[in-house]
Length: 63
Image: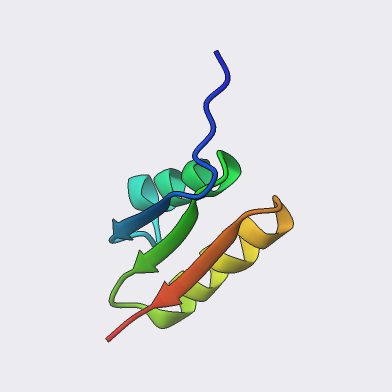
């Protein structure tokens, strides 16, 4: 089964590590534009970089 989320936007809270990170990368790989929110800015940026390497689009956000 092939899932595509093209033209969809996903918000992943706590996305800088663990399950949130895995979810953000999976959503980006499926074509969604992903906003990753977490307390650690460096972790958000790392997830955005990994997603870009996979061809996905992730916007990092932290307080």
